[in-house]
Length: 156
Image 1 (cartoon, one colour):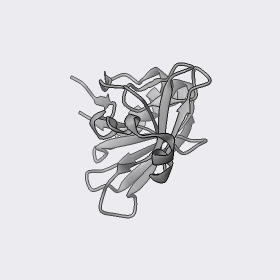
Image 2: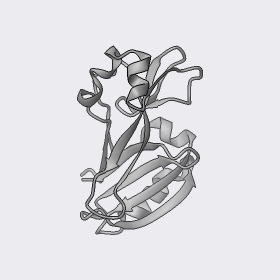
Image 3: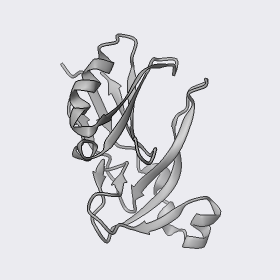
Image 4: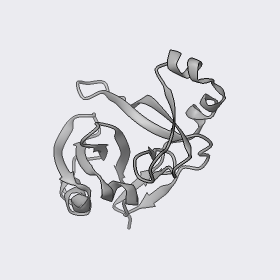
């Protein structure tokens, strides 16, 4: 039986953004960037780093829409043209293992149950510790250096 599930974001809310020119994106607080390295632009739909030359959008995304003090939004990258969200069952997307992470555990009411700042290589063990709390329903992974929201890990 599966213990956790990670799904990329739905591409639907971002589908029309690629048609906007750079000035229109800027007017909405977004930027179009061309990836210049193989590991600096993780797409939140595909849950993989964009390849050099790929066009990505940098924008603010509300990733914790709870009714409480932990409500939160932050920067994310979305690869232009990403159409299918990736799904991982009891496995972490490889891009999480290459970064310093902040893992934040929440209960069903959006209250924080625990948090850890770690090297991505430790993510499996620390995630297991956070999910050992029976009240934890989800864990949010953030890039600990830049603060970017990486993905939500849902207890199954």
